[in-house]
Length: 256
Image (cartoon, rainbow, N blue to C red; front, side, top):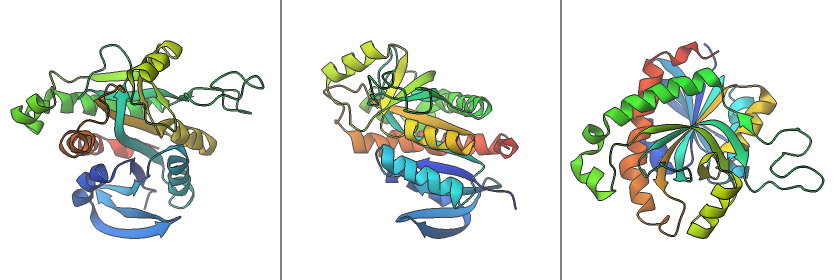
């Protein structure tokens, strides 16, 4: 049997959205985490809840690659929008990831991960392409999937897909001042979150393909906490379920 595809989620609600589709499921505990193995849409998969923050994400990614020999890793979750036009309800498919709180200067340039010679870690192009296609199909059906009432409730209008830089750091960006400072320092950053760049570094160490898929839950400003859990349960988890199934059904088995 070929090695599984790994799908990790930062929040329990997203993992729960995927679990019903897992057949022949069994759970294994490693490093205090529950890993759920089985088949989804004909593909062997392992699902995991990473927890929040860079250390939690790095630990989870390391276990997925070393203990389960995952042949590729997809991370799903929510993020705060930074880029112009990146709105609540949109989806961002990362093309690069960077730790915005990494600063070992003057020994190394700001943002550069010491001893690696790089600050930005690129996602796998083919894997990200496929997820972007699936995400666009999901966005085209957003009104049908969420319902008009939910769309109106969260102020969602014509959600779309963005691709580019995602910044990660070990703090929840929740003030307009901090959001503006990040956008000024990293003008090409589309979104900010707390796990992706750590996972990217681990996958680079293991030379395994990976991708990061983020639903924009807020604009990383003073209202970032409003209805956060409800948004994950009623919007982001729906997106995750639909996008992942579309991706798996559309040829995910071709991932080496």
